[in-house]
Amino acid sequence: MKEIEKTEYIKSKSKGERFFENWSLYKKNKAAVLGLIILMIFVLVAVFADWIIPYDAAIDQSSAERLQNPSSQHFFGTDRLGRDVFARIVHGSRRSLSLGVLTTFFSVLIGGFIGICCGYFGGKFDTIVMRLCDVAVSIPPLLFALAVVAALGANMTNLIIAITAISIPGYIRVVRSVILSIVEQEYIYAARMCGSRNGVIMFRHILPNAMGPILVQASMNVASMMLAAAGLSFIGMGVQAPTPEWGAMLNDAKDYMFKQPYLLIFPGSAIALSALSLNLVGDGLRDALDPRLRT
Amino acid sequence: MSELIEVKNLKKYYPIKSGFFNRNMYNVKAVDGVSFSIKKGKTLGLVGESGCGKSTVGRVLLGLNPLTQGEVIFDGESMSTASSERRREMRKRMQMVFQDPFSSLDPRMNVYDLISEGMVAYNMVKSRDELEAKVNDLMTLCGLFPDQAYRYAHQFSGGQRQRICIARALATNPDFIVLDEAVSALDVSIQAQIINLLKDLQDEMGLTYLFVSHDLNIVRFISDEVAVMYLGEIVEYGTREQIFDRPMHPYTVALLSASPAFTRAEKANKARIILEGDLPSPYDMPQGCRFATRCPYRIDKCDQVKPDFSDRGEGHFCMCHRKELFNQK
Image 1: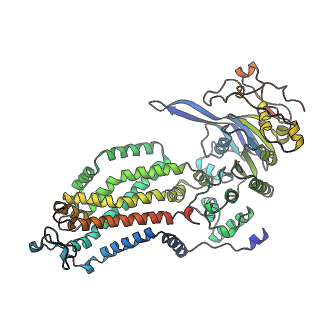
Image 2 (image 1 turned 90 degrees about the vertical axis):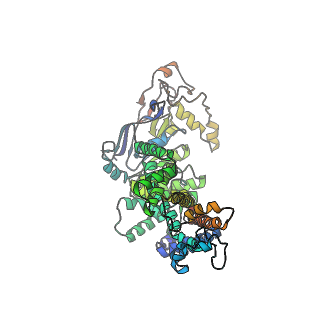
Image 3 (image 1 turned 180 degrees about the vertical axis):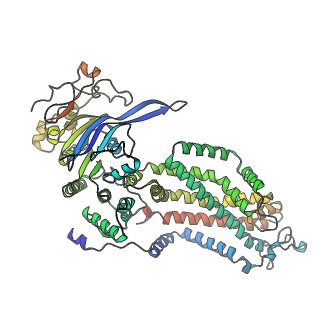
C-alpha cells in the first residue's frame, strides 16, 4: 500500500493524445481506412471541382456530341444533350454529397434529440410523439416530401428540409428503442445515485452508449437520402434542370439504359461508392470509439 | 448513538395493468409495510430469499424507485415530504453499491470520470487539481492503483470493479451506504477482501450500512442487527446474536439450516429443514401468515389471522403465532 501512494498517477490525456489513440485504433480496421480514403477523394473532388474541370463543361450542350462513348476528350462520354458526363459528376458531387450528408446530419440531430427525450422521460410525451410518428410514416415519404417542397418552393434548401422531414420519424424510433434498453441499465441508476441530473445522464451516459447503432443507421441512410433527392429532382421538385446532380443524372439516363449504359454506370457508381465509403467510415468510427473493444 | 435512518411502514406496490383502458388489475406487493431503523455507525443486515423484496427496500429507501406509501427519515428529516432539490441534497449523504459490478459501471467512462462524477455533480471541488487529488486518495483508500485511473471498467477484474464502485460511493462523502448484494457477484476469496475493506472503511469513517444479502455467513460477519424478510415483510428482527443463536421464526430457522456447516460440531448439530409447499401468488397474498403455506408448524389460526410483529424481549421481534416454539435459550 505504501508504494502505491508514492506512484504519481497519470495526468489526463491531452486532446492530441486522445485523437492519436483513437486514430491508431481506427487504422487497424483496413476497410474503414479504405472508406476514409474514398470519402476524402470525393470531398476533395467536390472542393476543387472548378480546378479539375470548368463548370461550363457540365452544362454546355452540343447536339453534335450527343450520346458518345467514353473517349480521351470526354472521359465518361456525353449524355443525350451532349454534356460531358465527367464534368457533371465532378460538379454534381457538391450537391449530391451535401444533400446526403446534410439531410442525414439534421435528421440525426433532430430525430435523435426527440428520440432520447421519448426514451428517457417516457410517459405521455412518449406516447404522443410515437403516435405522431405512426401518422407520419403512414404517409408515403416521397409524397410527403413533395408536399413540403410544393408548399415551400423548389430549391436546394427546401429539398433538404423536405428530405430531413421524411426521415425524422424513422430516427426517432431507432433512437428511442436503443435508449429504452439503456435506461434500465444499472449504471444509469448508479449515475443518478451520484447526483447527476437528467441532462448529464442523457448526454454523458446514455448518448455515448447509444452512439453505435445510431452511427450505423445514419451512415446507411446517406445513400437513400441521395436517391430520395434524386427522385424529387426528377419530377422537378429538387435541384433544377441544368444543375448537375447524381440522382438527377441517373433519372435522366434511365431511358438510355440499353443503348448507352455508361450514362447509368458512372453516376450510379458515384452514389454507390460514396455510400459504401460512408458505411465503412461509420463502422470504423463506431468500433474506434467503443472503449469495450480496446485491449 | 442516535438513529441515522428510520423507515416507517414502507410499501412498494407494482401495479399490473391490462385490459382495454389499461386498468389497474391488481398490485404486486413487493414490499408491504417494512419498518426498521439503523443507528449511526452500525450495520443492519437484510436477509431473505430471492424475490422477497430486500433489494427493493434498498432502492426505495434511496429514492431510486418511488415508494407507494410510508416514510423514510434520514438524520431527523423526512425524505418523503422534502422537495426534489432537497432530496437530491440529502442523497448526497446516502450512497449505494450495486449487486453487479459489471453492469453498474458505465462502459464508456474511465475510472477517473466514474469516481469523480459525484463530486462534479455536487460541486464539491473547486479545481481540477483538487479533483485529481481526491480521486487519487479514493483509489488508494479502496486498494486500487491510481495510475490505472484512465482505464475503462472492462479492463478490471470483478473484485477491482467492486472496489471502483465502493470508491465511487465514497466520493460524495456519505454517512449511509446501501450495499445491495455487494459481494454476491464475486468469488469467495474476493468476497473476503471486499468485506474486510468495507469493515475497515466503516471503522475509519463511521459509516452506516444497510447490507442486503442472501449469504448468511457474510451477514453474520458484518452485521450488528439483522432483519429477516419474507415476501415483502420483515418476519424477524434482532441483534446478530439473537437471530443467529436464538432464532424464533420458523422461516429463519429453516433459512439458517440451509447455510452450510463447516465444523464437525456444527455438522453434528445441524438438522436440515426442507420447506415444502409453494410460495403464495404475489398478487393474491393469504389473509393470515404469509409463511403458512410452507410452514412445518402451521396451525389453523395461521391461515386466518395475521400474526403481530411483537417484541419477545430484549428488542427481539418476531411475527409468528407459535410463540412457544423456539423460545428455549
